[in-house]
Amino acid sequence: MVEEFDVIVVGGGPAGSSCSSFLAKNNVKVLLLDKAVFPRDKTCGDAISGKSLSILGELGWIKDLELLPRGEVSGITFSSPNGTIVDISFPKDSKQGINKNDKGNGYAIRREVYDNFLFQKTKKLTAKTIEGFTVTDVLTENNKVIGIKGISKDKKQIEFKSKIVVGADGSQSVVATKLGLNKIDFNHHITALRCYYDGIKDLRGTIEIHFINSMLPGYFWIFPLENGRANVGVGIVTKDIKDKKMDLKKAMFDAIENEPLFKDRFKDAKLSSEVKGWTLPLGSRHKKLTGNGFVLIGDAASLIDPFSGEGIGNAMTSGKFASQTIIKALKENNFSEEFLTEYETNLWNELEAELKTSYMLQKIGRIKFLLNFVIGKAAKKKEVQEVISGMLVNKAAKQKVMSPWFFLKLLFT
Ligand SMILES: Cc1cc2nc3c(=O)[nH]c(=O)nc-3n(C[C@H](O)[C@H](O)[C@H](O)COP(=O)(O)OP(=O)(O)OC[C@H]3O[C@@H](n4cnc5c(N)ncnc54)[C@H](O)[C@@H]3O)c2cc1C
Image (cartoon, rainbow, N blue to C red; front, side, top):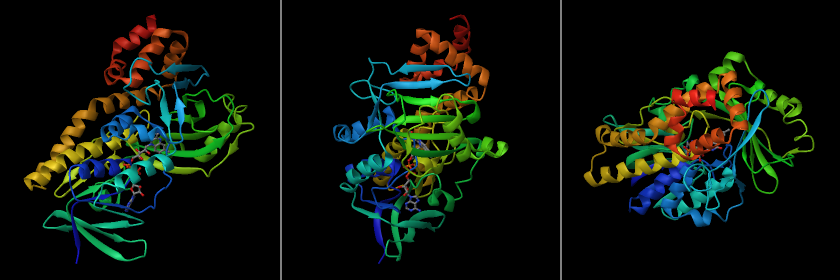
């Protein structure tokens, strides 16, 4: 007998866990499947955005989150290709925006810890959760998705049926791939590496983003964690890596050993993990996210911010928006593409302007002269720092930066 559920969620990362939790809190019978056994690592920069915090707030989980081991950051440090460094604090008077808690500080939490926190909370709510279960295909009938099949931890092939399948299985989503919706466009796709270091000198309690020459048009990051540990990595648009035939790992270690900004800081630091690589499908293109009997969320839906590389917040936002449409679909007993498209429309209305602005900022980040100019101005002028600081926490301010007036103002500031 094939077991049946209202909804099957494939993937228990931030997208799948948040979607499952919102559904289960509304009495939806959810089956949550993940091929991993939690706690599991996820290759990431570990910076947790204000968007994520606001969804965690809606789920009522902020207080518990604050008990987790974490790094606290008070702002962002940028360095330009010509070596200018500027620290930009998060505004203290606003609790919204990226990386903010009541003290005005933000978080960096290892994904092994953060995702396990979300997953364990979710597991308590869902009708059934199976770890170590790898989904291998979607089941279809009369042009609609009616369930999934996969392999359990003890190597049994099992099928489950549902009214809706949610593909939350990350950037290499099996659900999206089987439905013909995971075509990679290397212009809208970043490849990134991440490792952990202990004992880097002069960690300044900020998220560090370094636009060093050897890594352009991408960047090198250092994000401080707990106990003197830091998340270190690099990321570049995949098309550029291919065009330049870059060896990303070699470029990262060359920078650590030879770049004047890092040489001394890393001299006595210890690499405390392996170097892992993974892909970031960007939200700078609009992908189809719904069809008869299914929706895609998180990285499976290609929603990562094309400038910052932040994807956890949008993954959780998409989980929330998808749950709202699914709840309506269950009430109306309508699981058609036409009905489920509401999710895609609502999500796009929420994210489109911000994603477009970030795509433009990504393009500006490709122009060395502009990077030197903007970071150079910010290093000298408090007013410019304040504009950028506002931009980090506020969608409207971010859009202002796209105005030609912003650049004219910069010229004369
Ligand atoms: C190097 C790097 C640095 C990044 N830095 C940041 C950052 O600092 N801040 C930020 O906000 N974002 C960052 N991102 C992006 C962020 O990691 C993703 O956007 C986020 O993890 C998306 O969440 P998700 O739930 O959609 O997917 P995932 O977190 O990838 O979760 C998918 C889940 O699906 C499961 N799964 C996969 N396939 C199957 C299958 N066949 N069957 C069953 N289960 C399956 C996986 O085990 C996993 O648990 C970074 C990404 C990379 C690669």
